[in-house]
Length: 67
Image (cartoon, rainbow, N blue to C red):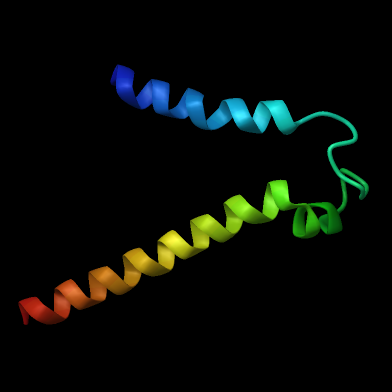
C-alpha cells in the first residue's frame, strides 16, 4: 500500500473515532433511528450517495459521447 493511500485512510478514520463516544447523539446508539437521524451518520452517507450518482451520470455521459 502506498504511503499516501495509508495516510488518506487514517485521515478519514480519525473523525469517525473522535465521534465514537457515548452521548454524541440523542438516540439509542444501537438503533437504526440513531444512524438515520444523527447528522454525524447522515451527512457522510448523503455525500457518498451524491458522489455515486454524480459519478454514474458522468460515466453515462462519457459513454454516450464515445458512441
